[in-house]
Length: 79
Image (cartoon, rainbow, N blue to C red):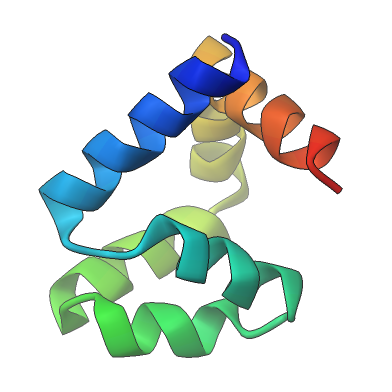
């Protein structure tokens, strides 16, 4: 996955969710991702996301997918 593919994926995610992915990335970089999530996701979506992230096995399963690994690699390269 190159930067063009990453940008397309982020644009698609933004269109599907209505969430500005750049603002989400900025919130994460500032350590304010929880605030961003609470303000931009429904209470049910927030609960589901937090459940996955607080469940070590579920988080590891999610993060072990090739897509998640590639996304994390690309996000870390931008720093």
